Image (cartoon, rainbow, N blue to C red; front, side):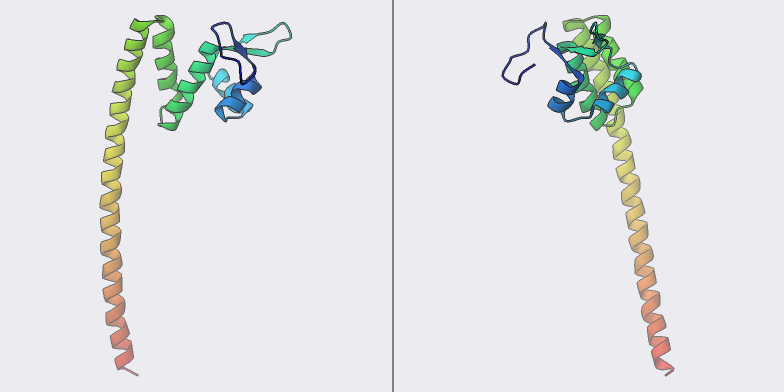
Length: 144
């Protein structure tokens, strides 16, 4: 597909087209295919042929990957839409996405709180070490 062509429902893409457009390697695309998240058709020459739907799935996969979703979570979200395409599938997918994202956000907030507590502990221990070093420095300096 050329860059100036507007994709239609019948437009197909090669693995190289998608890789270039989305800034990923062909290996990345094959990885998601191997894990069952993408199911491209094959040409008579056995080359992968991706549809607009596959392209949309890959975009969704990449966005969710960047947000820390697991492969299983992504597969579940894609299946919710694929099982019932259209507004109802979109609604179900978005509801499940929200539930997963909210749980992930809670986990991130908990991790941030844990890291802040760890930071306070480390700063406290550094302060203790600095005080001990100053005392040791005075004691060592007084004896010479």
